[in-house]
Length: 147
Image (cartoon, rainbow, N blue to C red):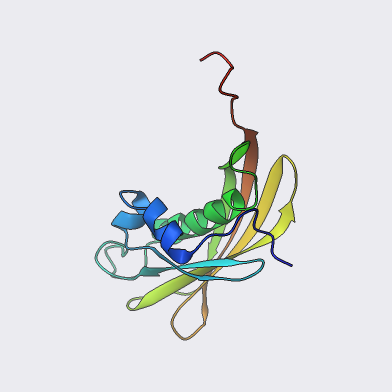
């Protein structure tokens, strides 16, 4: 059973991330399942550190991007929005070329928090990074509420 609150396409997600950190790093949303979302990121001059391997911060940005997007797709976006509360990452393997793919799956979808697990793999499907992201679910201010 799908966890998403409304239907969307990969093109919708791509358009939403134009002129953002995701867009500047070349992150592309690439696959959707009933209870998971995936995005990929190139390992290139934008995402490597001086040793020419994937920068850990770029991996964390990919993890938070795909997890945050997934969390926001699980709430009624007219009433709520989700923001990052905590993230951790374990970098288990380097990557020096190609693409890495982050796949977010929920561990907990609650009324006030979500917890997402994001596995980042290389093109050989080997684990590069595992991350856990906690999101805070916030109520949007009503249009009638003051400033």
